[in-house]
Image (cartoon, rainbow, N blue to C red; front, side, top):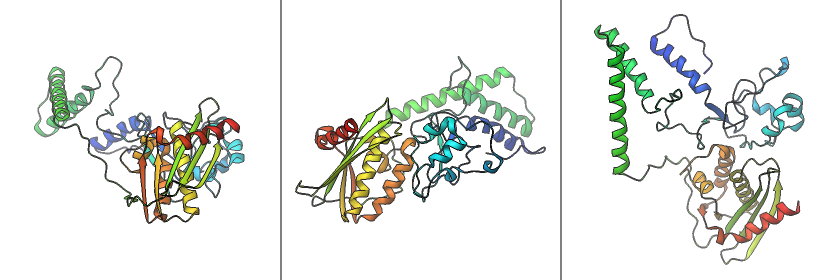
Length: 330
């Protein structure tokens, strides 16, 4: 991403470096431990758009990484943020890093998952130009160039455009056929496998209440014995929360940490947020909770058996009430 274009290089390498500008406008960093992300050079403050800190940079801070803005317990160093990045200090505190073992990752900013897919064209078309045909124009130009180099044959602009339209139509037809033949998308390979908890296992229900105006959340979790009798419950208010999904993830992580403190060997984690549960089970990806999800997966290794299950809101009313009470009384 940082290499300079050499004076002499192959056409292919020069083309790759030219295409890099498209990546730079759409690729950002999700913060784990902050070690691999440069404060001033990388786009990390926002997961939705390309945003880098700006303003005069103190010479001593030129090579800072995001980890230098975190305390030893992976919290934001508010004093340092105010000194170096006062204009975006609050926005930065909306980011919830992972633990010290969680590495930073690149994310594709235009998508909520943060994961680039071939279903989205990297060639961004000008206004009024079909996003389907533009990549095939690029490909038709590339093959025309190869034909000129290796076969000494040339194509007129009309021939190149005709080939691009034919390739685009073939691709669209192939996608339509594939959609009709299967409605099931393959799941990504799981990085973490959890041993499913059985029926004689304690449960932990978590929930969150969110106030979009103040960006605060009430977090709650209730740990019960298999019989249904409560072992432990707790709630708290969290500041600097960017979304309801982040609030739900923070609540579940807090409940999991308490279950570890109680030295429970088995646990069934229950949440009414299906996106969160799917992300933990590696059935989906959500860039804004990347660090929290990695924490949850690593903490889970403390249990002999653990499972993460989605439940309906009607089965989570106690945790919901506790979360709302915490938010309203703080």
